[in-house]
Amino acid sequence: MPVLQGPPGCPPGLEYLTQVDQLLVHQKVELIEALMGFETSNQYVVKNSLGQQVWLAVEESDFCTRMVCGPVRSFVMRLQDNMGKEVLTLTRPLKCSSCCFPCCLQEMEVQAPPGTAIGYVTQDWHPYLPKFTIRDERMSAVLRIVGPFCDCNCCSDVIFKVTSLDEASVIGRISKQWAGLDTEMFTDADNFGVQFPVDLDVKIKAVVLAACFLILCGLLYQQKRVRQCHERMVEIYQLCYYSSYLCFALHKESTATDQKKEICCISWIQLSIIQSKTQDIS
Image: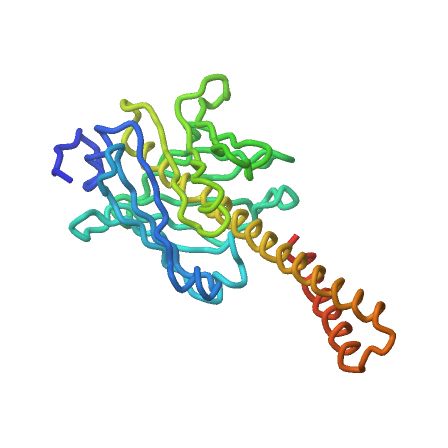
């Protein structure tokens, strides 16, 4: 990307944000995670509306935290420009996301350059809607983000509205774009869009972008849970089919051998195990 001259007070490396009103965030597919099922550190490519790479975002977190804490894990996200220089640092501590814990909800600190806070994203308590507040470096509320009641819409985008503090006017949005049934069910390769007014303060633009990373972690986790549940349901269907066939054959054949009876018993034991795994996922 070309080097632009930013306005006074613009953090170094964020000059390009002054010229745009939307960005795309695309998660890079990790082969190990797709094949083995182990949670890996996420990487994202931030692009402009033309598909050109603006920044590369790399998550820093340890393996145990990812496996145990899942979507509420703590991490540090470092955004680098095309020259490898770090321009944004997003720090997310370990917090809860449930409405049952209103005193320990999600938050994220945004630094640009690294070490200098320019804003924060904090989750607001609500009994059924995901809500967040965009705050400046003095922790003063600037904007609100309001999400849908259900964040697992099928065949349509999931939209989080960026609104004024009174939520009366919508000035932008953060959206998870529907990528097709095959992509949604079998990969985490999702596209997220961020839209804001072109004349919005560049620091607040950076904080809205940071809110996208805070939101998408939960959406990706929900998608992964749905995909795992789908896989278990397929296993249950297949096992039920073969088990029913075997039991029917045993019932029809009066001279069934002990080996056939043993196969039938093992099949039903496997069915019980898969059912218990499905209950754990749900």
